Length: 366
Image (cartoon, rainbow, N blue to C red):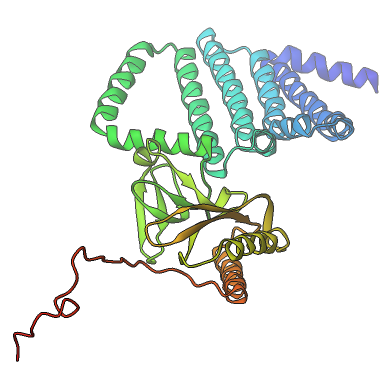
């Protein structure tokens, strides 16, 4: 058997060297494929199982991102080694070398492209607490940069001068940015809003431009539903430069007003009203206990004013109005129990001289 195989090798070597080289090239490619199979089926999955024991999933997600490019890399290496063994002209060998390096660059770009939008990227963005819109924008921007860099490196690999192309792209980008400066301003305004997160979808906001509930946020504009049920689209460049009051994020809701009673109210009854209203608020389950103020504040133009200041636990507008209404009714009950009347704006006029009728002057109408 061995003698027969040796005779066959001598025969092919004596007849034509190309057959022998083709056979060796095929064997090289098959051996690389065998190594690829062993690596992908055993070694790679052993490494994956090892990464499950780590505290983070970043390493496992990174390996999965490069799984496809790694499998293709073995095929590229097998083809390169097989072709390199053949007696090819130097020009073709140089072409194959450039092609192999280009394929390696593409495979690396493929892996980083997967990494920029895969599980690893999502985990990093979640840890950084990035908004979904900003995370998506950053992912697309990273992928665009990866593709652009890959194209430039491959062009350099094939001997092209990319300095002129880069300069042209820079001038073209400058011209586009000048022509679309408002759009660029809105884009950066959207990035600033998403990074600072002064509000999110569903929040009730107040700005010098608009007041309402945020319905949608994009990189160009923000849509706000006003309380008149109108939809207002505000450019992000405007919102980024305005003071934004986020009413949704208040921890408690404030109630502040003056209660005016008549000047005929006795001092003791006024004191009783102040004490009972304070006791009402301090024992009400819906009133926040941190700060409650009920004081006889000042002497008004037509009333004795009691200053009432407190916060409710609820931040929901409808529930807040319900609590406020209940407290107002109980305050009226306290006033009625003390026989105290609420004052209304009035003015007393005093005459320095007596009226003609009181002075006994004749009536000119008779």
